[in-house]
Image (cartoon, rainbow, N blue to C red; front, side):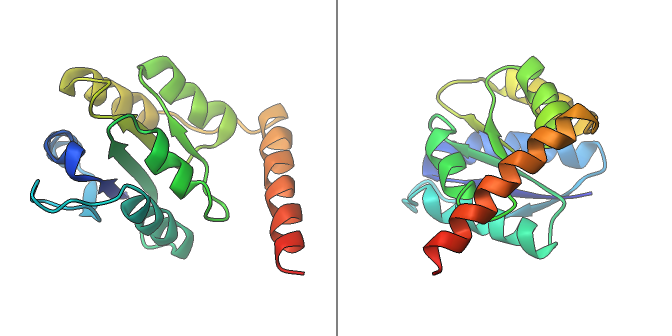
Length: 154
């Protein structure tokens, strides 16, 4: 599995820890964020890069990290077909895949520590979409996205 990582300058250390953690588990990690803390990066930029790479099929899932995880996930969620969820604990990370078919996990480097972050990504990548009644709801979300996308392009 190819995993895209996006981060701002605040989250470089946590990104590196999580990339190493997932590489140890056999994942291919592709870095879309800065590597030098001196490179000040606005979080919408890497959020968009990871989301677009996912949309194009260059990666299979994404991990986004900024100070809280909120801003970077908001940027990613503007890309059609992206379902990025901010999770600060493992239970929500698991359920966002099982129920929402999330394809990007986001978290805050100022919110979670490295060991909790590892647990969060483990649950996210270990979960599978359940489909069924959840597929109906995900389809409803996609329909809203399609409706508003069409309206903005009229």
